[in-house]
Image (cartoon, rainbow, N blue to C red; front, side, top):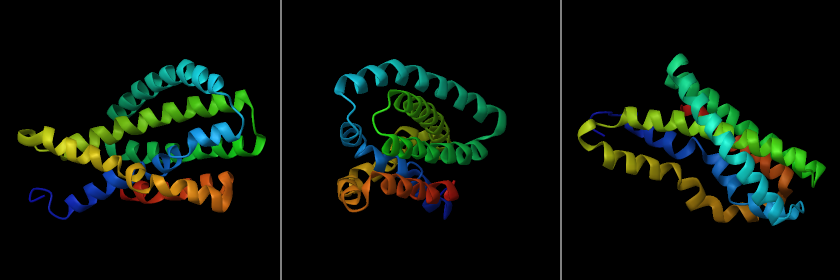
Length: 182
């Protein structure tokens, strides 16, 4: 904190808000899929078949783009892309049980999640002092999970109040502070 001065506060805020919208949505994503009448088999088969490939592609693309265009620019870009994943959820909430829509959304979600994680992890490492990097990384990465841990319990109440479509629009809005801070 002494080394980063006031930027230390911004660093903590970026780490705690960058994935806020995505993590808040993850709190209700399994019940959402079940409410749209995807079976556990649909969810399991597609998430395993598509998820690993998409995550690998996203990680490789994210690392390559960060190296080419710079960390800050890609952090903002990947944050915007991650927020747009909610549009896929909105489409599913409107069209209902559609394996094609689910597969596309799942691929985009895992690809953009991996890209954002690559950039955020790189940013977190850049904030750490080499002498105590392990401790500092543990603290910074714990902040990234705060949205789900602290606010995830309220997601179901929000869905019950406004429905899934509006909930996912709110998820897009919840990504804006983290993107702005990045």
